[in-house]
Length: 233
Image 1 (spheres, rainbow, N blue to C red):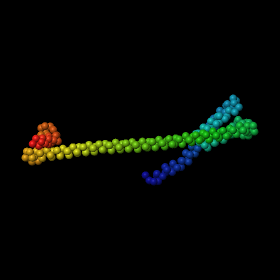
Image 2 (image 1 turned 120 degrees about the vertical axis):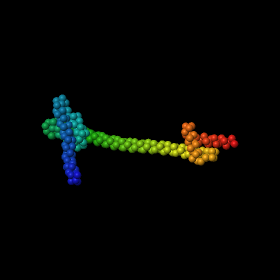
Image 3 (image 1 turned 60 degrees about the vertical axis):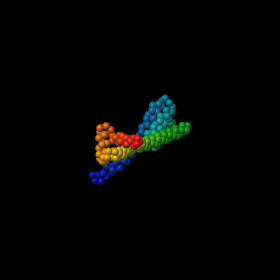
């Protein structure tokens, strides 16, 4: 595959990235618009039951917009909610003008909407930050766990290797001790029976086979008998 062929998908991915960003932005503002529209429809439906039904519904819309979309969609929801409230619920109706008597109430609504947007957006950022920290900690814990498991495996392998070396060392020590005893016993038999080293070894070997004992036991028996004879003399 040539480098030219590899460059085509990369360039296509880069060209599509702004499109994905625009789609994500449009989705966040679409959510804000839908929330405010839902609050407006509900408020119009409840208008004949309450003189001012809009505050809580629009506050909820603003908070939901800031929660799901972020700070700017939340401010956009505040702006749209302000226009909707002014147009439909603040005298004179179906006008963007505000009576002097309702100015304080309307200003309180705007300030409350801004506060609701800020609180919701801040809480969302805090939650995202906490989730990032949690994910980072989980990744670190998983990494440390893998490292500890690797260390434990290495320690177990080292322990098995040490036990194997200890076993081999013990076996070699036993073989060396047996060889020393056999050599000493051969010397005793050579002197006592006036035979060669090879004949002494064969004699011990025959006794080992006949008595079904190891060469070490035969050698120890020869050495013990020689020591007893010397003691009796």
